[in-house]
Length: 195
Image (tube, rainbow, N blue to C red; front, side, top):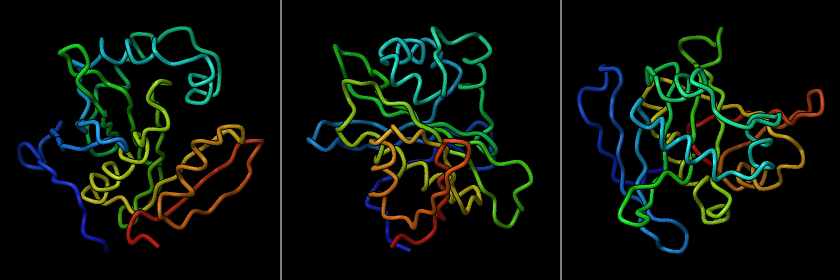
């Protein structure tokens, strides 16, 4: 297993729910960023993030058109147990405030064995910050977090036209398996050792 280059801070015992995850990071161009856990107080920030996504980015994330996040959506996205469901945000300082520019989350797949849990992962990155390494950074941190929760494998469903997301997975360093299911690419990869 490779040694992580990230300084990770867990706030509070790991058995407490929800727990707090925080790490300093930098984007590809050196812009300082933070990776942290998402909580109920982030609902307004996630509404703002959603409003900054193009219609195409929304479609890639949800697989259908969506005009707004409902109260139910926001509860699902922010009220997490950090075991079966967890989410991290990438933030940067903009106009004196920490602004969420990307999120990543996992949901443990029902029926996956306790000794080798599998989780579905998905992302959203604001259009103006795509191509700056946000997704790759978020994936690395979610892998670190998930390993500590006994998750051995990630899976994702990606539309074939979402070339950036496919390139992100292909360039992640993990051994990616792809299958085409009903016009959607199903990706699976173990999150232990990288290639």
